[in-house]
Amino acid sequence: MQQQNTAAARLPENTQKIIFLTAAAITLLPVVTPPVALLLGVALAQTSGNPFAAVTPRITHWLLQLSIIGMGFGMNVHSALQTGKEGFLFTIAAIAATLLTGALLGKLLGIDKKTSHLISCGTAICGGSAIAAIAPVMKAGEKQVSAALGIIFLLNALALFIFPAVGHGLHLTQQQFGLWSAIAIHDTSSVIGAAGKYGDEALQVATTVKLSRALWIIPVAFITTLLFKTDTGSIRIPWFIAVFAGAMALNTWIPQFQPTGLFLVKSAKTGLSLTLFLIGTHLSREALRCIGRKPFIHGVILWVLISAGILLAICFMA
Image (cartoon, rainbow, N blue to C red):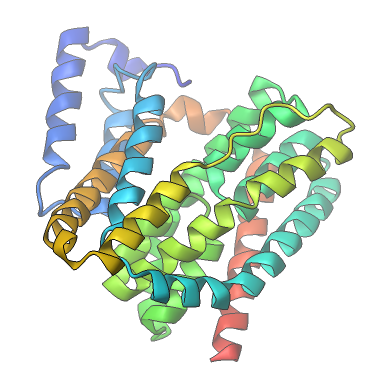
């Protein structure tokens, strides 16, 4: 999606590939945390570039799904159902508030309706996945999709560092932080990365609530067809969530599988670091330039309002 920057263009292609593969291998080391992996990817995007830019989005897509499924092998069905129930009302309220606030901000800032809606959907549901699912339904243009994705990816990167710091500063419990990050951070990768940095319990809460939030892609896509008066296009349904539920079931009801499950969970966390590295490699200067000032302001204000509102609600309910 992004072009190589000028500095990267001066490097021989083989050198770029060696640098990229070496950096990717480093993210597999146990000492490299997801935030550090993301920073490494961003640094690479700003310097030597991503010589595999044509294929890494698809690899990232599948690697993230496999990592999420792997996380399921360390979770309990009963705890997940209880967590999902507690986060259900928060999720509905947050999605409705985000879409309405996003539409209002778009009008106030004079942003075209499709770009505004894409940013709002990415903020409300599951970041880049929601944008990819909604864009064909509303027949969005390439520039509109690129601007929305650029904003979401940038804010996701910031969330990975800001949320744990705020959580510790406010002394949020594992439950509170998991719920907050699941609803207020855009992409699943950053939700899991931030929650995993905060603690294992926060990670389990965040993963469960976030995946239930992702299912709202389906009703929002149908609402989009009504708003933009388009025929229902292809909606990407996150089927991997069913496999994630199956992984939880194995861990809960088949004790003999748990030793294998622990290995898969560890592998999933390593996979997440590599996923965030690959996401970071697409935050090139060109990708950031295509965002535009007004859409960027729209995305930031919307994110801050929703994040603060959800945080206040969670703290008030404590």
